[in-house]
Length: 155
Image 1 (cartoon, rainbow, N blue to C red):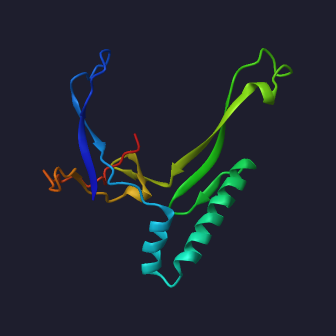
Image 2 (tube, helix red, strand yellow):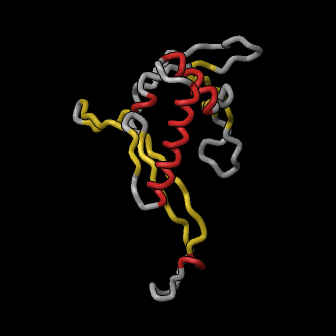
């Protein structure tokens, strides 16, 4: 169940100033060690084997994106590298050392496109079927909603 909390827009120049929105309320962080422990309980691999596979996967993703590949993991999404650079007056004056000032890793979750009633919709595979509830306060759920997250239009 995905927990959410409320936040109010307090930006003075915003069209939605004073209005309330939902924001994900994280329960914490799952580490590689914890994920490997969970996976071990659901398959025949040992925790150490799972951790080694995850570590190798991270290395392969890193090598792939550093070599200009888009790395696609079925059911998860795609990783790619992008560059942050400053301008140069001409191509000839562009210097990678001086003008490339940073790199970013971009992740795009896997999506499926479908047409319904003549409209194009996308479903992000990993979040399809998500159910939400108001984050617990003092260990108790305050309010449950009927939202399912199935109506992701990809906007």
